[in-house]
Image 1 (cartoon, helix red, strand yellow):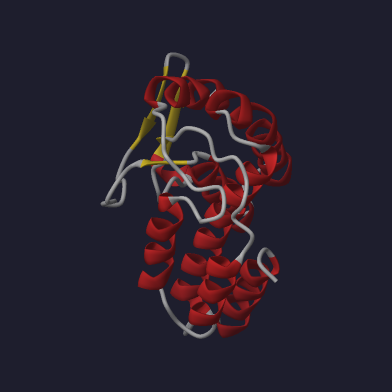
Image 2 (cartoon, one colour):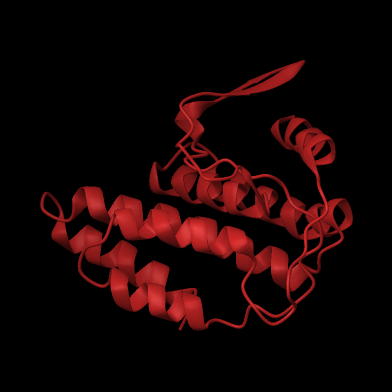
Amino acid sequence: LMWEHFAGLIRKTGVSSVTSRSLPPPFVSEVCAHIERFSHKGVPELLEFIRKAGWQGEWGSEALMPLDFTPDNLFVRENRLSFIDPWKQGTYLGNPAVSIGQCATLMQLYHMREAVNMADMLKINCMERIPKLLGCDTTATECAFNLGATLQLVLSSYVRRESHPFLAAKFMGCARAFWS
């Protein structure tokens, strides 16, 4: 149900974008700026890996891409999906797989019931449906999903850097694994 509502929002908010096939799309800079807000040990190096990643591909259109798209900010009802407490963003457009990557990652970090299955279902839907909705390719969608997961892992590491340094380091290692 959540995915069906979210797919409807993608259809309603999709707009054409002009993106070079050899440069990162503009939303990558915005997400990196948010990652930089939570800078701590290892984040500058991680950002270099992200910026140097192979961002080639067909990015297609852009659509709603709210950040801080977390399970505790989402309310799913039969007739709608509500999202509260969004971060201030320069633009709310990009690849929605970023939002889904962030949400799926936090579900797992929270150890929510059925989190692994839900995260897998969300990722599969991203890979199968977002390319059709936005005219992008699967590689671009996977990069966007990984960027959202990275954002959440960096944030989760940041808030645990002093209270649980081992866990903070583990989360940073998981984030780096997407880009090395």
